[in-house]
Length: 198
Image (cartoon, rainbow, N blue to C red; front, side, top):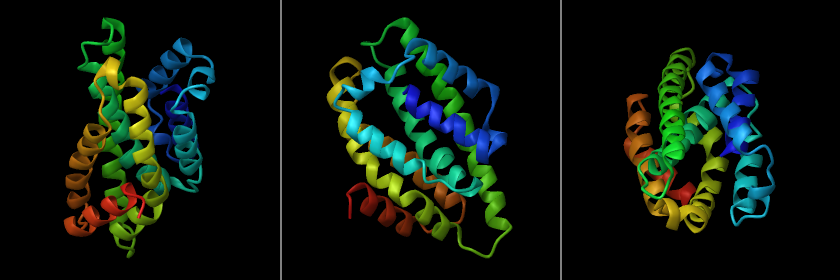
């Protein structure tokens, strides 16, 4: 998660400083202390899919992209994964505590990003759904492979299942999109197509 979190932190600092909160910095700092090198990731089954996700997210060009990609999508993925680890009997007490803290930070940032995207939507004539699809499509296409990799690497120890991660992510994201005035059917169609690689 370190590489995943570091990218989010750097993009928040560059494009959405309001989301570069101290609690997020502390999560990044803790993960960097625990895993100062990318080597464990690079030699794991997660390497290719995670690197593709990181590359896809790196294409964010402005604050709105970051609100959608990091705030609305990937922060919610982190929240779901941390929630799974935090509830796992296979994790140590320290790991569960860190996951609970990191998950709480992610949940808070999801809500902040939602409010900021809502404010952006009110300031433009462009439909929120159109911008959401444009910003999120590439990243969503990479998520399914990451979920499968997470299950292969951590599934047995932390009882993480790809279908559960994706399902919980979609179940949380759709109502948030609807609150922004997006059509539920169109949001579901976009997510299904992207996550299935269509």
